[in-house]
Image (cartoon, rainbow, N blue to C red; front, side, top):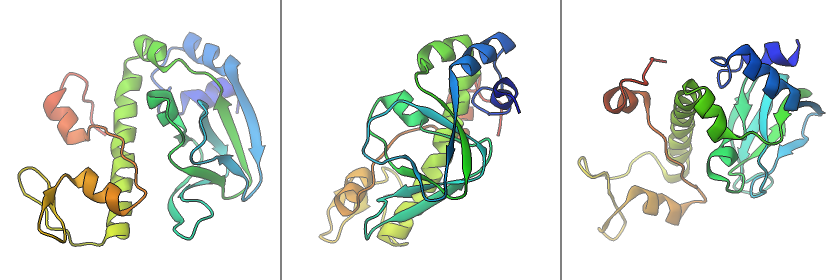
Length: 199
């Protein structure tokens, strides 16, 4: 498949006009990875956006450590690395080729300009953040246990000494989890109905 056709099937770019897809495709590069090869590494700074063309990649937290956690497997048309475009921080997880994988990557994507050209991209990123947040929640439960006393109103958690503390502080003190924030589809529908199109 040509790069323009492939990009048109990626949810992040699917609402773009053909001339925008051509412009982005001209900047994209194809790279092959062998099973077990690291594509991006947790802690490194790098602003590339990746899209899986063929094969599978695995997202891993704490790669190579005794606390290694395999979070999710990504298949064709999945994308990753977009968080670095949003917050310009170090990579929050390692991504490793699970099988032989063909990956399309963009070195420098000016996300702000692309969103101005295609506002639907912002909504897709919010949906993606919501999905990633759900994965993070599952990881947190697996890391911290399945029963936590939490306030039904403010969502603070009661710790072992009986103090009520913010959930982010509780989890950060007890794990290597880092937080990013998004808006779930239900809240998007309630707060920003003009941008909500459903999942």
